[in-house]
Amino acid sequence: MSTISGYDYEVPTEAKLVAALGAAAGSDIARALVSLAARKLNKGHLRTPDDVIRATEVLMELGDQLRVTARSEKIRAVTYRALRATVD
Amino acid sequence: MFAASIRPDPLATIERMRVLASIDFDNPVLREALDRIAARSAERAGLPIGLVTLVFNTAQMTAGSAGISGTWITVAEGTPVEWSFCANAVVTGEPYVISDTADSEQAGNPLVTQDGIGSYAGVPVILAGQVVGAHCVIGTSAHQFTAEQLDELWVGAQQAAILLKEFSDLPSADASVVATG
Image 1 (cartoon, one colour):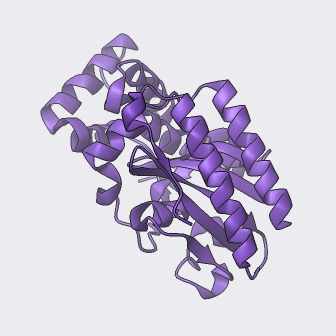
Image 2 (image 1 turned 30 degrees about the vertical axis):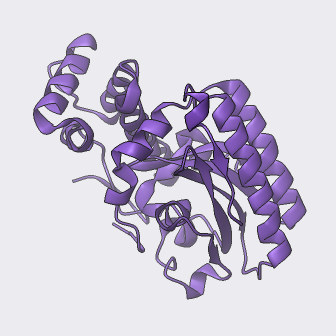
């Protein structure tokens, strides 16, 4: 698994996004929402950190507490991308 | 993965998430106003960095900031929650003060080992009875914080809470702000 040297920070994935959303909305709903976001991005699955970032932006549009968790996960995913750009 | 003392579960209570969801936290007018609070507190403390954070369930958002431009934290607009000093103030509802990070529970935090945080003082920001974030000042070396500096932080936290209230859709009866310094 890809991590950022010095930060021990793992790459954001679809599974981690589902897990974070699942804690707030339940795992079945979380899987459905992430699948919906992926389809809106014309993707079968979220395969890169950029895919995850774009999916969080789609999910934020759904509003309410989902917006908070999606924003939170966006910060985590952008953290990975920003650190990757800085450290490597 | 580093995690000093915070477990994420207390950050994900429904009541707290509802209050966070009520805030228009990406509104640029709100963000600029919080930037000014962060800058003023840093200046008054004589420290390089000031922040107003919203601590979500898995990350903290730097809703207002001063002194971090050009860093990855500015790009990300926050940090993962397991590295968040402010999360400690949120979970306990009390000020969190680290005079010397190298000799503290945060010594292994990447924000210390990689980004050079040397000292930290933060107080809770409370909206509608929920601790939604923190207002803090940060040094790049060890620093002994005074009672007056903490008092200044409480003032800034109260002002941040008033702003967050203005940019929330909470019913007015639920939108009381509290500072308990």
